Image (cartoon, rainbow, N blue to C red):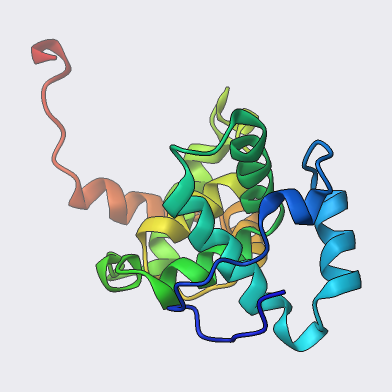
Length: 170
């Protein structure tokens, strides 16, 4: 078992076969392994090590481990975002929003339109958090996307700021 807390260690976390005992990988088996074999104080470091392994070995992994990795990211989205922001260059490449509240209201307008509700606010929040430095926890950002609606005065202000092309030219 890897007990080092240094994420730059060349040592791998446990081999995937050891984690899953050669069974089909699942989040349930992974969580059970973490509870049984990794002390609570080292679970985040272990999880971050699995993220690193996923990036490093993605092309070499069989499909079952790739599917597990995607499911792991989806089930630990906030930790994955924290990992990317703290341990990869992505943290330095995030776009800063000049007016976060306005942006969230515009995303809410998009989300409310017909057909767009097939995408959950959590997925939108995750996608936005990958590219924008909004410094909100994903769950809170998803709630803001769901409920932050611009009022009519704000829409009029926005309309005045936007230059519209002649529709016939499109």
